[in-house]
Image 1: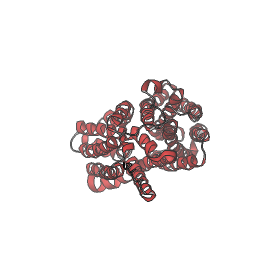
Image 2: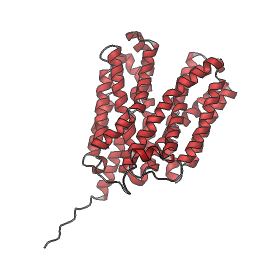
Image 3: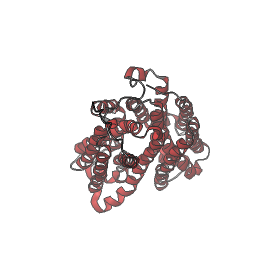
Image 4: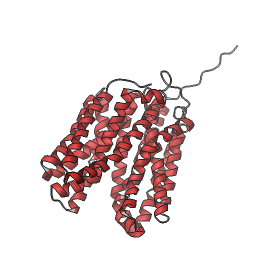
Length: 404
């Protein structure tokens, strides 16, 4: 009886090429997961003027995707379990391209509908990319997650930078629509990178036991610590994104141009912070030091705005580094605390459901607090307290515990 022949393992060169292609697909997908939001700001004045949008409706253009990040996170995790992370992310990129073209075709209802679809598409990527990274990169998952974070921040910064010049040539509708081409390119690369990858289709079994079920996950102190990091980081980021120019106008007597410059500096230096994460994760096995560093980077600019608002260029730059490193920390913790890709998808869904809900509430609470107190001292003290809470949650989430 002739023994069955074993399948020939792939050559090392082919494995390396496949891994590099998957890395390119992850980074290109990350580049698409914030751009549709960041692109609106530079042309918001034109949109309001052209469509006669109220301030509330204009605010929905940036708030609606963040609400999708929170409310649709569990649905995205369930979609990944049903059809597999690879096909789900591919479908989300195609939906994102369609949504970016759809939202510029007509008036406010179509604009808001397209914005909702774009937010839903980006939510799928937000939730499932950590699971893809966990399955596809093994021990290097922490480093790749840091690079993925850099892609998120770089995509937002790039779209914010190029939208106004594009609008000068194509109008705001053309500028927002043409940026959807990046999602089509991302879908093509993603399709090529994930073709034939059973580990990205939900067919590969977990490395050690079944994934943590929903009930076990929501009862896990470590899962809640990871979720708290996401929530506190999001609240700090969205609060300063919304109110930094107003705070400077009140405390440093700056004008609109200076406030806009500070906001741009805050966003741009996030790239530096996001690149800081993969370097530290690659060199240090634990994340406690990184968690304390991120909390300190948030605490310095907040207390600086309280004590010496005239130093706003330094505070805006340091806060930018903090927000880039903070989102990197939140995503790295999801990957490293999960024992398998299935748990990573569930933990990602949980942390984003709660985290982005807290993040969306941050600017509202901060703004509401500024009214009765007649200034920005109390809101800034609240943000300082959130930074301290981030340090505590980060230390707890950095413990070497595997969920699932």
